[in-house]
Image 1: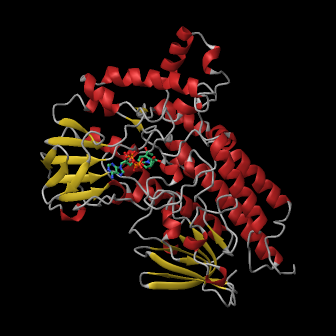
Image 2 (image 1 turned 90 degrees about the vertical axis):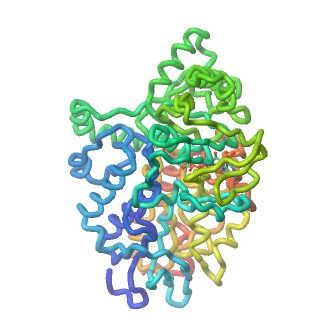
Length: 536
Ligand code: N01
């Protein structure tokens, strides 16, 4: 392009994570001028910020990485089936350098406002020390990128070291011999705890709600497996492309009570040995939606927790009673429950003794003060809409996105919304559920195709019709009730953020519906997407 007199760049992308990097690659390959801005000082997004001990994939490494380049797939050797943060960050750096994308990225630039100018049909985007006019704005800002700190009295008065898992410092934290508190037992907390336990003086785990953690079953990739992966490139790519959740795991066509109790036990034991999300995808097909089936599997997992934890009272506290398996997003772990058998690891059940304050020296509960050197806040994120709402986006007629979404996100295909022309948010709320890069990649492809179409037909403004947005949003909200295993206690409803509207933030119809409607939209030549404009 390059001949656009109103815009400094054709496409401005916010966020150098897995989604943004792919969108940048597509934009550059299609010949657009493109600028990316990134708040951090390096690439990787989630895998840049979440560098806490134990941080790793729970999607298989080779299904999380990119498939757009067979050469990339062949040359990059993942060392583990579920690679750790440092390796993941190296991968994204490798991709950016291999495809010469780094020169398009401005680091250390937090976007503070993005304002649509109807006259010039451009976005004026302002970040620290930077501003630019762009024809298109793509916010690839991630769903788990705004860390949440609970409002506990005295939180800032603590004089020791304090870290949020989602904002972990680049300089290594020295845990040796320290008294450490970990607040929160979601996927991040349960990864940190067993990894730091051997080196610290003590870990005190502050648990409000236990989670159903099951084994990740990680292991190194052997040379034979490495060769199989390389030979299997096309099959791996195609299987992930056809999978509703973007994984390689096989689906079972059996229901829980089709089997006898003995057969069921044997089946559960096999599922227990599977990697990561195999516990859901390859389980009995009714496990997430039939309460009796769910209770049966949950009972099996509870038995495993009791077997792993020596102290029966501690084991009982670690077993969820308020939700069945996958009622909340389940974590996948390595030696999490076993860590509680160490003499230096203890559990504080916040239902018995709630936190009353953080003090200069530690954490106070109804049972008194415990002193610490380090507090780890593993307290989660403002999921789905958090990053988009704080971007300072205002669309047509000056309407702030935050206001438009005050009662929950309104989207089409989880990637665009009415009233916000030329604005896209792949990997945002309402996309799908499962292996994020797979469906955010679908969304980036759709956006790339739509922008190409607009270029070819001389359209300067793209805006999804209100009717399509209403249909998609209604469908997503209704499917949350009928199709989703997640209950309203899950952060997928925004429940963890005080004052946030309770709306389902995923698309539980998954990729099949996303892909179906993308195809319909493309086949219609994006009917209604180019308001008031004649084709050239
Ligand atoms: O956050 P969470 P996370 N007092 O929201 C507790 C992805 N991820 O960072 O359940 C005490 O799950 C809160 O308690 P409760 C993955 O998608 C992936 O752990 O609200 N506790 C909960 O225990 C994951 O789902 C990997 O009662 C308080 C915890 O903090 C998502 O990120 C690894 C509290 C927050 O858990 C988020 O996981 C890590 C308070 N006032 C993360 N407020 C992989 O393996 C909150 N909590 C790829």
